[in-house]
Image (cartoon, rainbow, N blue to C red):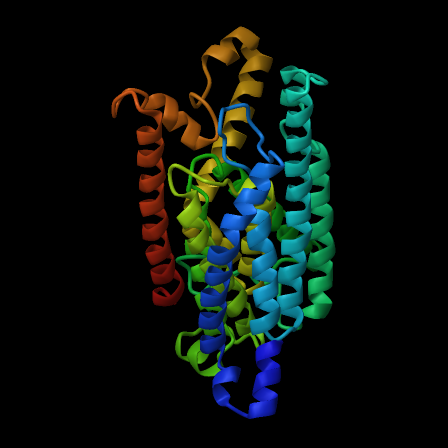
Length: 383
């Protein structure tokens, strides 16, 4: 909004350029993270904001600072419309749920340290407010935003664009009620998926960066009548205002990697992983590219799918063959997927656990970049 005000009082076209404002958002968000994160880390250490019992463990809730910065930078560089409001409201609401989880974990850990609670009590509260309550809030928030989007976003349609299939040949058209449920599911699943992915230093940041970059470029092209017509993409007026939000997220996450690269000085925590995951999901919905999220966010999908498959496989075997059989014949050594590779590759690269974690993270990072390139090819090239 500030940039819009500068355009109105100066008349300089650069302040109205989506490309300029997106670049400004990325740089501004990155600089704010660089300047504020060291003091924020020091503050979290003073209040002992950790969630595990390891000595000198890095504090959590690093993502909360980034969410605040992205919201502030978005308010400066984006012009508010239905797209922007929907994206920022989802980011704030989901981040609030994650922050509540983080605060609960920190509080329970302090009670254990003081002897007022046992480690068993802490493990029972390992999910913060609890999985059921959290999922209910996810779906309530997503459902409310999904309904609101019909009024706030006039160009949002329930037509789905299927990868590898030309829109003119076939595209499913969902009934309004089913499309609302689809939005609710995608946002909640994206938030949960990123939360599962946040288990190794830097692991969740890169899939979020590549996903945000993809959806930002798609938003920019879809909001430009000339570009969208040339590339046979539906023109979504005002959709390009999501571009500054996406690039603010990219800038903040890149700067965050400076502090989260192994060995991490701070962890993202649920406030960041859940908030940014939900933002990624709603943005893919708003640019009508929801079915491309599993392609670009293949790491997030794999992490979430591994948990679902592990639980489903265990419960099925438990019901059919008993608990002992189910416990000995798990689908993965441990879920989410990165934990499976931690156990499978143990000793493969020496006895150093950080070396194994770094190998897992970097290979998944490379997959994320390949998925980004492949996503662009499928979305823009196979029209």
